[in-house]
Image (cartoon, rainbow, N blue to C red):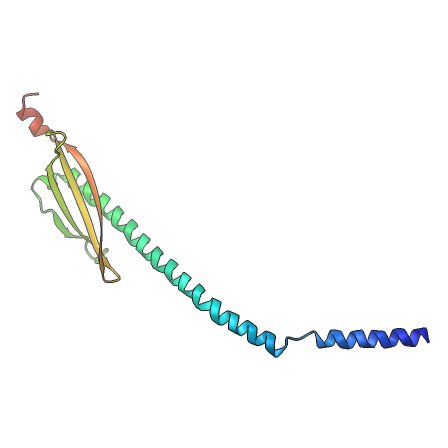
Length: 145
């Protein structure tokens, strides 16, 4: 008798366990609704991160191009008499540069040289500007120092 009672209890417990193995329709629907709410917000966050990374990459490229152009202008001396605008060629078709040289207000023996790199991203004009000071040896000799 005790063996039969144990067998009966085991069968009932087994029947309950087998009923709990799957999901109910309500649980499935609740999961679908929750995913419908969470998934668009997550995708918008991913799109925002991707957009931000593209802008950061472009800004980094523009800064590197500006630094290279600034160094080139100083090394060749083109900032004194050369053209202070142009493009970077086929390798960087979306970037353009322009330069400006002028006396530095704080010290007349120094010349301020700026290079601005511009590009268009998402229908918006963006730019990076790098500036350096160059010692003007001509003004040093002209002033008799």
